[in-house]
Image (tube, rainbow, N blue to C red; front, side):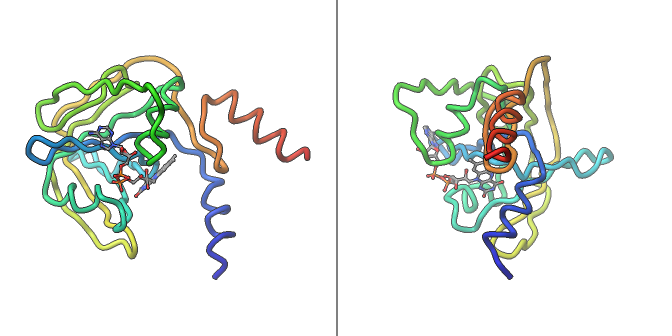
Length: 163
Ligand SMILES: Cc1cc2nc3c(=O)[nH]c(=O)nc-3n(C[C@H](O)[C@H](O)[C@H](O)COP(=O)(O)OP(=O)(O)OC[C@H]3O[C@@H](n4cnc5c(N)ncnc54)[C@H](O)[C@@H]3O)c2cc1C
């Protein structure tokens, strides 16, 4: 299996972008995640797939978490929580009921831990949605390795294909 080609293939699935946040005592943690999926309405379940190599993987085990769905202008937050610290970035933490959240996102879902499953080099964490909120606005999207607002991603991808 050509893993690089497989990554390119999987990248043809356009997604939104989230930051998954949790708390370990006094410490809060966030990780950028695009593997967020809705699973069930009754009960209300969502899933995130987290690399075993990520610090978040251990932190999420048995803990509540929040899924913060990013807006188009929150690219810097996505990069920051993907391990590319952004100079001068203020992180808009706010207290949630179950887990810390990021203020100003397009939507958030606060989840209690439901179940974790083996996903090869990832762990699939299912959470039961206990609280959520959403607003209007443009999402941040990820497609073919390009991260940005819908229009920018479209322009960049078309320009790349024309080269
Ligand atoms: C678009 C996109 C989608 C991705 N989707 C996934 C996915 O679905 N699953 C997956 O496993 N990986 C995904 N990744 C990769 C993942 O985001 C990175 O590998 C990430 O760095 C792993 O984080 P970590 O838990 O190891 O923590 P770290 O690398 O330690 O932390 C991540 C970053 O967040 C910062 N940070 C964390 N907590 C705080 C805090 N309290 N205050 C300030 N800064 C903080 C850290 O400084 C660091 O820069 C994605 C990356 C991108 C760009």
